[in-house]
Image 1 (cartoon, rainbow, N blue to C red):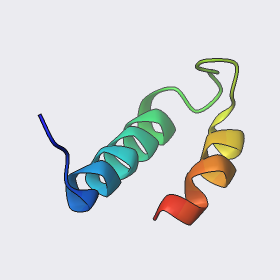
Image 2: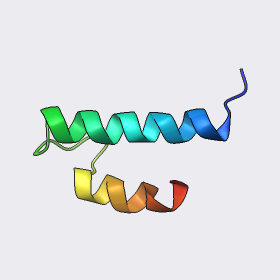
Image 3: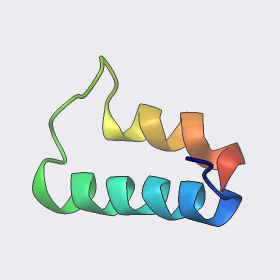
Image 4: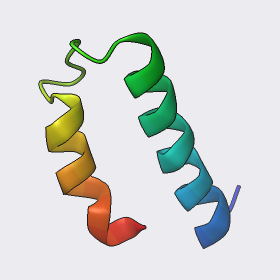
Length: 44
């Protein structure tokens, strides 16, 4: 299944907003929310 750029960006935004609303202090895959936002900023 081929993903479009739009759906990839939508997934990043959904993940970021869900993370910040429900588990802001949690880390996933060894990253904090701030680190994830920095790592994905160029993708958006």
